[in-house]
Image 1 (cartoon, rainbow, N blue to C red):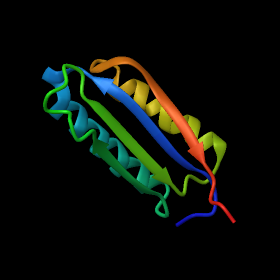
Image 2: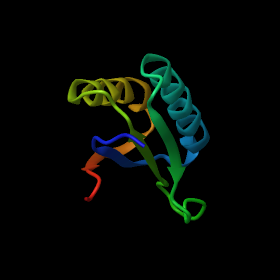
Image 3: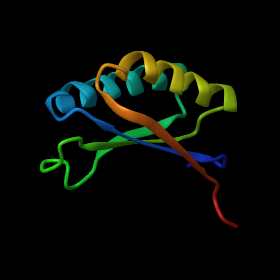
Image 4: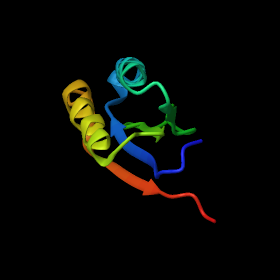
Length: 98
């Protein structure tokens, strides 16, 4: 794992677009790993997403090389996911503890 902050990004999507949104995130993350080979990333779906009208997805990023790279991720996500979002993307950054 990288020593910098890990980024956790969560947001809701339209239920009818859940599969499309998940696919778009995976494709986006593949592209990001192409830019930064050390990047580790994953997309998760909230466990109760099947019952929710607006399921929650979470992206986790470890190994972004800079704050600018984090901004690039958000810019790309806005471009790729805007059609399916319900509300805002929420970004949290956590650093390793000593």
